[in-house]
Length: 130
Image (cartoon, rainbow, N blue to C red; front, side, top):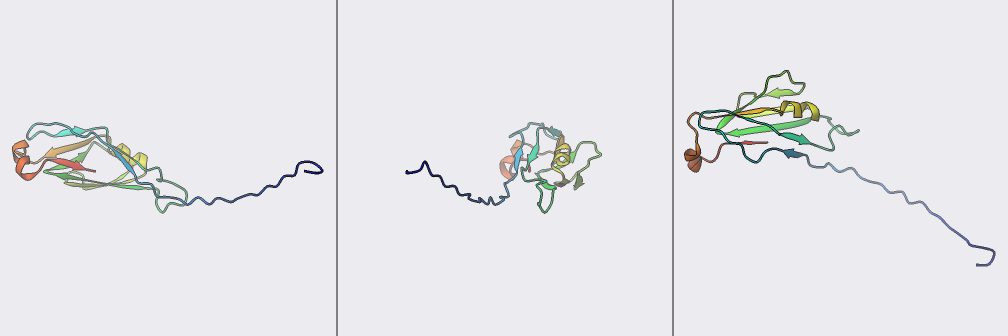
């Protein structure tokens, strides 16, 4: 235009709302053992990108493990996570993500006495649900 180039500028404020992202669980899909023998399950961990976010209502995670046709034990402590139900079919672990994952490092599944694949055909499989 006449008198040189003209410019205009404006700022737009963008508000980004927080979203509570779902946690993820990493675990082996299957482990094997023989009848009446316990099995150590390794490679279990949880990840929650929101854990410990400023402004979150709790920096801690709560992880519930439930066993069908057996019980669950954690490895030798002490753990910095709070653990209830160790040695039962329902185990609850709460604490920071690092503390929970340290407790999950070595889970032992102890199947019911005499439980095997033949019983699983009618009673359902032995499993640990996380």
